[in-house]
Image 1 (spheres, rainbow, N blue to C red):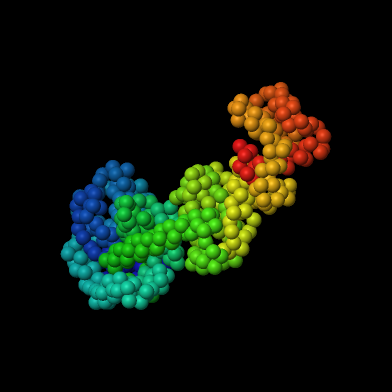
Image 2 (cartoon, helix red, strand yellow; image 1 turned 45 degrees about the vertical axis):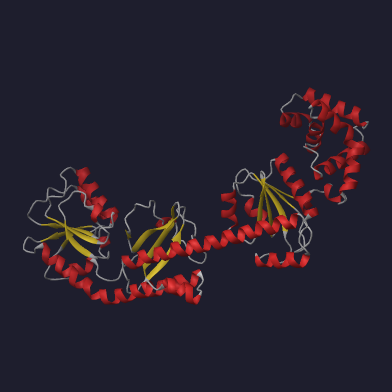
Length: 485
């Protein structure tokens, strides 16, 4: 992004023969814009500044110690001051190398004004030059102030609205959250380098302005406006109004998103209950941007705010249920969400739009359970090479579980023991007793006792291939039915 500012610059002032200005330091900042010239003998005039001012002093404002001189200049630069002009042969103290070093590092010009040139002459020259732009600026302001009318009468989308504001204002406009992410769809973020660090930062930055975008409860983000090459910038007042337009547009977008999200949650709840006919279900999915096959995801361990942030650019339906979030979306979205720290995600097989989610629910719940147990962020149902061969009929699964594991389930419930969990963990760890015992936080001898007790109750010797396969399939069925916990 070009940091050059059109209009009056410090370099232009140097070219005015009547002013006889001389550069002492900070030559790299000569293309900074100048909006006004003002004399100040305060060591800290920044509370009364808007930015882009030429500050003039007889030297009384400049501290004597080197550290305070540097701090004085840095304070002016942080407030967006264009340049500092010192009157020659009056009250300026000895200027230390640290002062000049700060000017060069920051690119804030330090100028010397001859004693023969009164400050009022400098102020008049600046005022005269700035006045030439006022007519064009006023016209741009009046058109930008009509932005709300455009929204109502032309139904402009967000990108089109801000393209028009850029054309009228003379600025390239960027919007971002406090963390530097895009704030509104279709409007780019300025990049980390240009994201303001605080809402209290001065509005003037090299090449333009940076202003907070207000929202209920605090600042929603920032508007950064850089003057476009060859354009006639309309000034701070217009940029402030654009920030207000951004706040109103953000409020509208958030309202629309929240309305759509609530409608999506209601639709997903009805789909999970098989309360919608396929035609109605497909129509509602299309309204939310879900075309083609979708998958049901069960997401556990993610805060809703973080989840919504990662879902922002994707079509989805989301419903919270206890510790889980049920998400209907295109299947690859699971990979995106798996980057969230501490999350566990179970993904069903793809289903046709509008089809029943009864089987998909069971698949996704099973997959998230396996994800939690294995410590993995993402499990897809199709990745279970044995469980996927189980029938979908819950009655058949229940019969298998009762036949093989019924006695163990009742024993665990009566004695508050963990035989089933112990056998399952041992099997999942490829019968490695030490690894399974460590995961269960028990001694290997305790695990060996539980395996023997399991065999006694089920009548199945886990050392034989036939019994092992039967128990493993029964465990997978129990997981599908939610009985394996």
